Image (cartoon, rainbow, N blue to C red):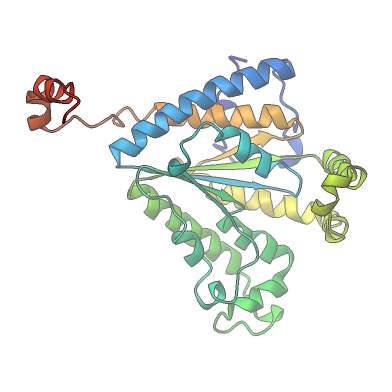
Length: 294
């Protein structure tokens, strides 16, 4: 599994999603992958403790992918060893009436990680160049000046949104947020199998919705717009990684390994030194605390 490195999945030039495999070519067994994930998960948890103590950076992890691509279970497994105070998960549903009173990035700004913590976006600000593009009628809910109907959406509207997102990510990166974006690359056939399992297993029935069928008819549109979003916004300070997602266990490990590799590059993240007063009197304090009457 040594061949799994961030360079294998990093988007550095325009990509064609149809040409990218949805199954990893690592030859590892399920048992090996689970063991490796457990080990890297422990390392990430230790790193997070140091990140918290250092208190200079926050980490934003964005997860995007088609329905059933495994976002929820990936979050559960990758961050299972973290101290709960160190990671906050935000699952972005359709905007509420309150959120629609602000611009589309507002609810994402307020969910950014505090310094020393991780924020995980289960779906993210990219929904605003994906779902609203496939279903432009949703854009009308934003009450954008000059756009009263779908016909009012100007030709350069989406290019401007890409630019706004690039500026948003540049701004937060320059102010101490480490940005990692993962596209869970699922095949249409694997999605069909996972939707069938939701129907076949009674305890999974609640996850299925009739819209899952109608959304599949829009698969090619989603892929086209995902491709454009990735190609327009993968930059050194906010890179995209395309993760083969037909194998859930492998996808979890690859994401965890990439996060670990990225965080390892921040050699300035160190536990802070104690104050001089504490350093100079450690033995004295230890001696005092050895007495039970204190």
